[in-house]
Image 1: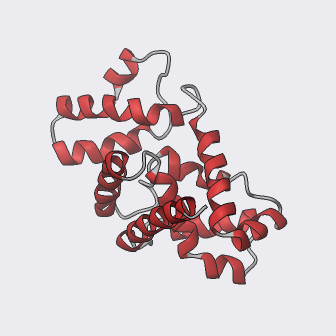
Image 2 (image 1 turned 45 degrees about the vertical axis):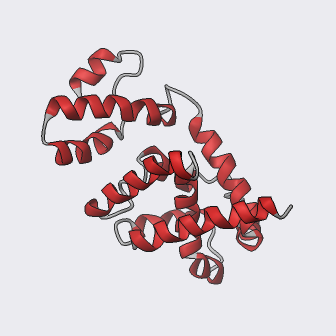
Length: 185
């Protein structure tokens, strides 16, 4: 991490970088290989960090559009209950590619799926994972008429308790569902 920060002084160290490098170090067990992979990962993820770019606002806007198109009832609830359609509750999800939301052993398959999806279905597959997380708990969110504070608390309490395989499966289904909506218009 020190080497990365030293070689990227403009960006410097940001909270969350250690969360991204730790799984790489576990997998590779070699600091030089981990460093090289982390540099490549930061090329993709760097825009999510505040001083590097505005990707977070784009992610939030895309989530708003996805929910509005694919689940209007959920969108209405979010809009009515304190208007949390700004999707700030997804910040940590996008910053760390869901690393803190999943069990450690599930992080690897989710990351690999996100990275591979860029070449197969969508360069924005992480949006569909986020949508799948929301949709997985749709009934709970709607029946409890959750507001912004409730939904943040709910997802913080659910961290590391999600079924990663089910979330990935639902995310794939949501990509196909959106593709069908587009084709039928």
